[in-house]
Length: 88
Image 1 (cartoon, rainbow, N blue to C red):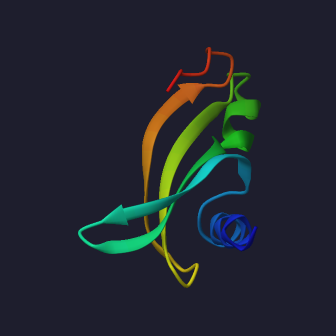
Image 2: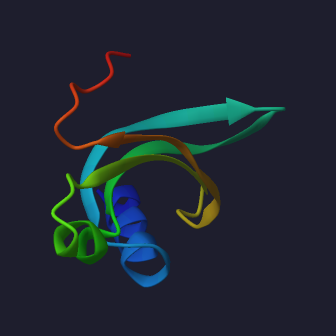
């Protein structure tokens, strides 16, 4: 749960409120352990609403260390909200 709280706080402060946290998994790379989360965010909600366009949903990959601190993130996809969700 603390990982999800940290991810929500990070997105609220730096990007946009998270729409949905898709997954949180233990992650190991190059001998270092941490966490990997996938988060959906509604992108530019007010802009899209103003011009009567469908909202865009960004899918972000977030990495956290063992102390629950965000160490990196990147947007890995962007889609219209009405599009079918990608199957992983």
